[in-house]
Image (cartoon, rainbow, N blue to C red; front, side):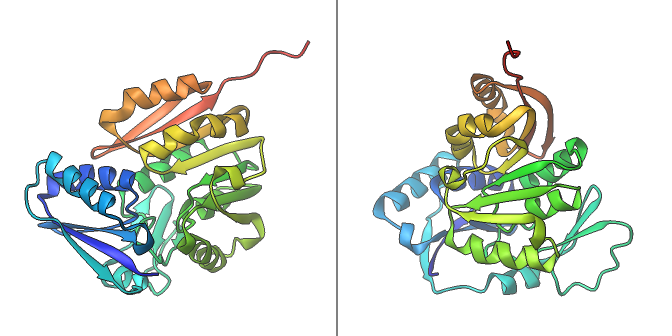
Length: 282
């Protein structure tokens, strides 16, 4: 798939906020250096409106440099990953590419080769989701992975003892990459993938739903996720900035969800919500 690359000259302290804002606009992959942030969006989503919103977003966040747009023909993200990848340790897990020869010791390996750059464990929101999953996971859980990307959270759920995992994502690249990563990790027998949005998922009564997506999407699907949890089920949300914490808690409460735990890393916030039990049987 052809991709639009957006290059922004910006100080490192602006990068996390830029990533969050650009993700809300539909950008899916990000690369960071000391002086630049590069963002990627599928070429079929390119429009004059998107470019104008991108420029405004960058300007509003304090970067006044020109925003450069380039068309990139189908890109091998594994080559990008191979050049920059280092193992990432998160709790009991270690995330690494399949060509790594690193001794993982007593950690659980998550072998991830991405077709896009998000979901490799290098972003704080992914690490936050993994830490909260490990802390709150119940063996034998029925799990839904919302916006699964590379499949890293689905694979981790199986490693933690999930009975089965249903995952979905709207992006065309995700289906193939998800299947590859699930197979690499030997968990295909307990994981299924649905190409589409939340409405494409028919299951309900999940013990755990984990959603590492941008804030706008989390708000949009919060009620549906809550309705698909069993009573006392847990919802883990990640991909939210600390500045949006209070508003997300209010969104959760409006969806019959009570805050049970939370964690932060850098400017990012993630939370565990518990589904409030329904009225007693009569």
